[in-house]
Amino acid sequence: MMKKKILVVDDEPSISMLIEFNLKLVGFEVHCVFDGEAVFDAIQTFRPDLIVLDLMLPKMDGFQVCRKLRNQNNLVPIIMLTAMQDLTDKIAGLDNGADDYMTKPFSPQELISRIHAIHRRIQTLPSATENAPITIGQISIKADQREVTMNGAPIELTPKEFELLLFLCKHRGKVLSRQQLLHGVWDYHFLGDTRIVDVHISHLRDKIEQNARNPEYIMTIRNVGYKLTEPVVKESLA
Image 1 (spheres, rainbow, N blue to C red):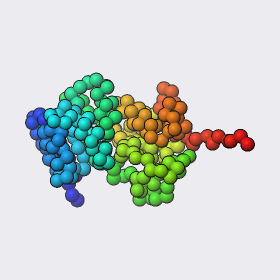
Image 2: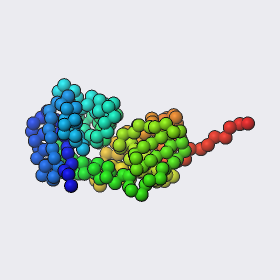
Image 3: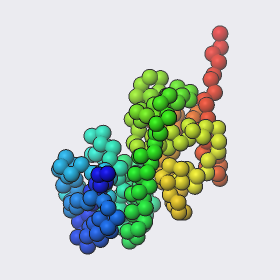
Image 4: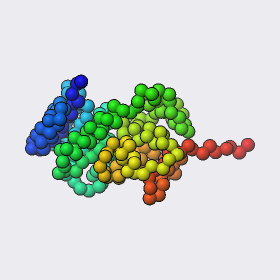
């Protein structure tokens, strides 16, 4: 089995060396670069399976790197590292395309756990038995091809948005707590920050709802979580 490749992007050599050492220890192949612009050459030559990306970088910061990769339709999973405790910076990372974030200082073991969690989700979603399209309202999901359409038109989702939508569809009509979604989609077996769920729900609504402020598909269940429902078909007046 080929080793999974991890690209580490951090301008602090001590942090890069710590991450590289611990990732290699558990069997990953690791390549380090030290500024944002270097990511794009590394993408072509190293072809990483996942990027560990610091926010504060020379030449191009982590937000810009995320945004540029997603604009190029590059869906490589990204875990963003930030020394900032402010929630706004964390949410901005997710807004720009990161799949997850961690706040410095962090435990290398937790970083490894989150990398494994992302890889497990990629490997297990979709399963080989999910060849038939899943349809709810005007949305059709081809899980084996990781494609989503609405009224026949393709919808571009990030890998995590796709997994979240698929998980909600599998449990349609059921109220799911934020912690259940965090466990089911992010595969976190520890108490994680459930605000990451709210950010991805918001992004998903922006893409599948006609009016994200008045959703027809993803309903908020106050003080509990979310539920995916079949939209009510409005009868036209003859």
